[in-house]
Image (cartoon, rainbow, N blue to C red; front, side, top):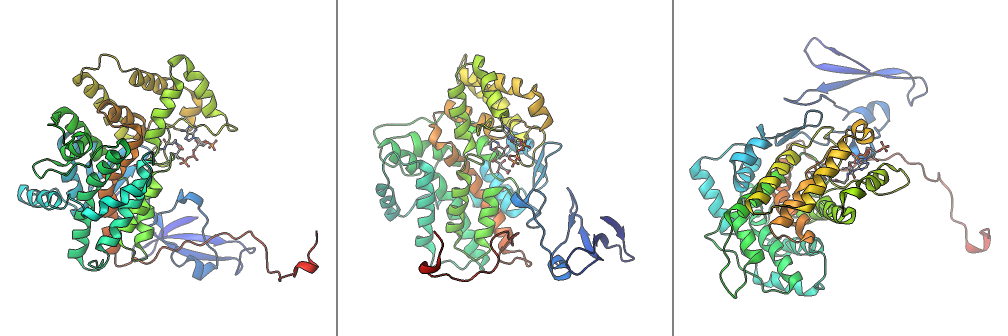
Length: 444
Ligand code: SDX
């Protein structure tokens, strides 16, 4: 494959097809498109028409599914930018709602615009009273992510008729409703699991404060929000807000490409995020650390993680894109240490165990050669546990945060003039044509 510039400066890649390929030997020119950052892409939209060949890329390891301006990741350097702003600067200086505005609108808001956006979100935080009935259909021990998939999907029944996704105003209202109601629905899932009454949101509370209030306050008495905990939770939400075309975001885009109801699309994203290879890893990390129990057992688990015949993997380690330290994990590692000290934890065994596990893994040739570093899920669970969030709710809070990323990406897709329904092809290796045989003629 060689690439050269034509007179009009359109960069092209030459694809030389050998005599054995369909249509025989010939050269196909593929336009090479260059973004503002990151690798160039080969534009293969005309490839099938010119070669009758598909490309083959299970898991989309080398495939750009769309053009986007929202988030850029440099996996080799451990860089994460939201609309050009480094995640580290946003985590230290911004708030989750401001990052939500940035992801959706593309610019940091003026104070006036932010206040208006924040008020819009606040005044959508309550859910329809009928929505409360969906919870009673679940067993009390239902996983909160199962409840989230069901209840968020049910929102599509409450807003379906008033929703024309081609009307920007209606898209914005649906987006505000989702951002506003996710904490309420999440907190209700938690309250349902512990048998406590649902708490209504408070219009005088900020986003993370409201989430803490609805999860941990009870009608029986006052609940004092710890500002340190609220700030830590808000930072965790920022760090989980968006991450380019990850599995759940790609799910939301694919569901949205058919014109599906956005509430149903977000429910599809929640379902995908739940998997332990994706957002479910934060919960799996805590289970793994508790299973390891003591640093003396770390070598045993490192050995298992390296054993191809053992399905065990080091949860919170490795990443499809990052082949360097996940910048979010770096921020969370520091936040974890600071928060535990601020909360008066003299010694947190799980954090000590996690740091020892990280140290040993990063010195092991297997992890070094495969460039397996801690990812966003490795430390987040320790922080969430320290602020009182039960393990089963870790991925739910990830979903609350990622809703703003899913929405920003869904809006970008709907507004993309080149957008069409997503419909991948396949490499078929099944049976060739054969004809039906009645029972009497079939072999034993
Ligand atoms: C998230 O995409 C995103 O952006 C996701 C996310 C987001 O914000 O949306 O960042 C959030 O999902 C983070 C990832 C959370 N998942 C985990 O922590 C689960 C543990 N990690 C692995 O399952 C794995 O690393 C993945 C799923 C994250 C990435 O898998 P890939 O890209 O398909 O890589 P791979 O499985 O092909 O791994 C490459 C090699 C393999 O060995 P070989 O077949 O080449 O011999 O590394 C090995 C893997 O076996 N490997 C691990 C490992 N992760 C990869 N071996 C042991 N422990 C691990 N954790």
